[in-house]
Figure 1 (cartoon, rainbow, N blue to C red):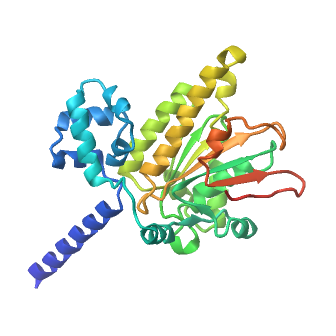
Figure 2 (cartoon, rainbow, N blue to C red; figure 1 turned 180 degrees about the horizontal axis):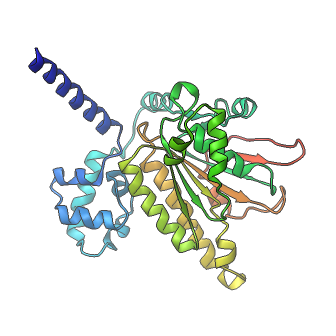
Figure 3 (cartoon, helix red, strand yellow; figure 1 turned 180 degrees about the vertical axis):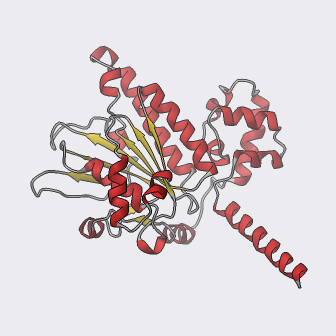
Length: 311
C-alpha cells in the first residue's frame, strides 16, 4: 500500500514538472539536454541569459559578442533554443486561451480596478506617471502587498521586486498595508526583494540580476521607481542627449524583453515603470518608441483629476 502511494506521489511530481516545463520559462540549463556544453551554458548565464527564452529572443550578433562562444557554437545554441521556444505562427484560438489565463492584480481600490477592468495585468508593462505627490509611489507600495495575496483575492501568489532609483521606498508603509489586508507583516517584508540603484549602469546591472532571481523564485511583480530618474542626473546637456537616449532605450527594451521571457503563468511578471513629469501636458521624456511597448498606462493628477487609460 505504501509503495503504491509512493508511485502515485512520484507520478504526480513528474506531471507537475511537465506542466512547469510547458508553461516555462525554460531554465538556461535545459540547453544541455540538447547537446550544448555545460561550460557554454555557464557563459550564457554569466552574460545575463538565464532562460532559453532569453537566448531565443536575442539577436544573433548579441550572442556573438559573448566571450568564448564561437560562431559555430552560436548557430548550434540558436538551433537548440528554437526547438524549445516556438517562434513561428500560432492560431488565434491558442493565443486567446493564453490570454484567458492572465492574472490581474488588484490595486487595492475598487474604483481603480473598475477602470482597469479588474486590476493590473500581469505579463505586460504598465507605466504610472503624473504630478508630484499624486499617489504614484503609494500605489506601488500597495501592489507590493496585494501581489502576495491568493489568486481568489485578486493577488498573484508571488513575491515582489523593487528597484528604487529615488530612495522613496518605505518598508513601514508595507506593514500598514499588510495589516489592512490581513497579512503577516514580517512575511510581507520577507517577500519583497529590494535594491537601490545609484547610477544608470548600476540600474542596468540590477536588471540582469533580477532576471536570474526570477528564474529561481516565483515573482508576481517588478517595480522600477523610477526608470528615468537617474538619466536626468547622469547625462546633462545637449551634448549627451544622444548617449542618454541610446542608454535609456536599451534599458527600456531590456524591461520589455524581460517581460516577454518571464511572463508565463508560473511567474506572473509585471513591470511597473514610473515616469515623473513636470506637468500633465509635458512632452514625452522617453520618446514615442517606448510608448509603443506599453500595454497599460496610468495617469495620476491632483485635486480630483485622477484618471487612467488602458492602451
